[in-house]
Length: 443
Image (cartoon, rainbow, N blue to C red; front, side, top):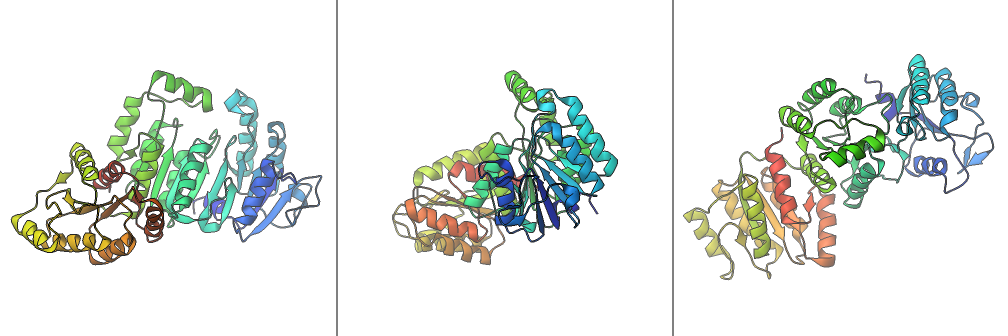
């Protein structure tokens, strides 16, 4: 069994530095563990408290009678070695050190002391200087903000804010995450440890990485090569420019390395590289929910001629074939659709189209069998989009990519329903097409 299994699937957790003060991190994390629905034992640790948020408070870890699987540490850095020693004697399996004040400010000796003590007792350490972790299958949100929605994306991030942004977007879209782990200084648990765990995790379909540097390039390559045989991996790594590399060094003291080398590693191992946070999210959504097309022949069906053109340009740039319509398909569509529709690819159904017209068009195209994927662009307030897409997905295994924009409140309602039904929605045609490009290059 992977030793991190005892961390993510913990049956008991202690928060050292739990606080009565709602503004303190120790209070926020304890509250999120409770409100997140964690079903195991919860032990607040604070020598000054008797009860916090309805849970009995203990003065020290050793005072707790029961076993403790994970300890979350939110105390000043100078006290962390003592807490770690106590955790080791308590046979704790994993520690999450939220506290800062270690190698990120040059305090290497203190961090090394923490690592030494943890290693002596076999305690795996996430952090320090991190935002904790959230594993939704176990309802264990030892982090912030509180995210409950379970989904297929595992987020591993060296930046707490970047990771939290991804999980909040996934929560808002109602597609959810399997996990969010903030790496912090990576004194022990690194991105490779987590990639190995999530590659085997049945609750994860795609691994989403934000990293500023890797501990060991060779180990990283070997790990992602093995993991890629089981799960797609998307990565956002900043520090492409000289000043960006300097910013990485000042942030977490990571060695960014030459971007050309990292880019070559991605291409060699099959990692999908994102250029920004939006792409990291979009590509993770696509790989978590959509199947790879058998080929690159795409039919665009749109209510907006302009959006169809934008999608066409993006597809051409990405090597996707905006396939010409055969005479037979063009004839069938012309006979079935109103005269104002522009029967070509993109297929412009015009702004007065109901959702049913998309369904009719795709069904006709499916009968011909020469299309590998469909992009449906709902460019107006078009009710019923979700039902149409749901019905089409029941009729074909070919991927149906959806972009919805310009639809106001109806767009928001339909987008929410589409996500609830496992269909990712992209806010612009370009984002939808680029996500499709990533699908084509995936496993």
